[in-house]
Image (cartoon, rainbow, N blue to C red; front, top):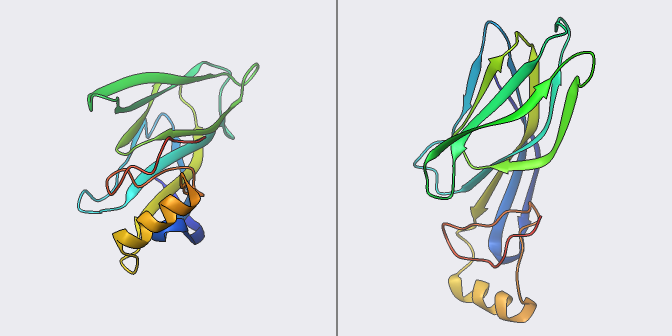
Length: 164
């Protein structure tokens, strides 16, 4: 199963609110896949930023291949192996906030794990208290606005180039 704990909530320029939640799930011989998804009716922008994959207690010295299934730029599902973990040579892998848009499915393609996947669920919402005119005024005064979470409310408005 997954664990989501609220870490931070803040309001950014332009009335955009950012919330971060800790994310974690474990894949094993008993639970070979896990899907992270959000409510489709939700009007917020969601990003799953992966930080680390690691073998946990009870892992055997075997290759554990973790595959991620997510949508590509054409909105087609794409499966990509992201880690090959082995207890004796590479028991963990840092993913440095590798960002994916839900829904995201993790598969343990080979090995018996257990493999722990950790990261952050970032949510960006627009405040109803801020008008489009106020956002445009801030935009013209400050130039390009960026959300402190590192993602933008693409559904509402193009805020400029993405920054890592």
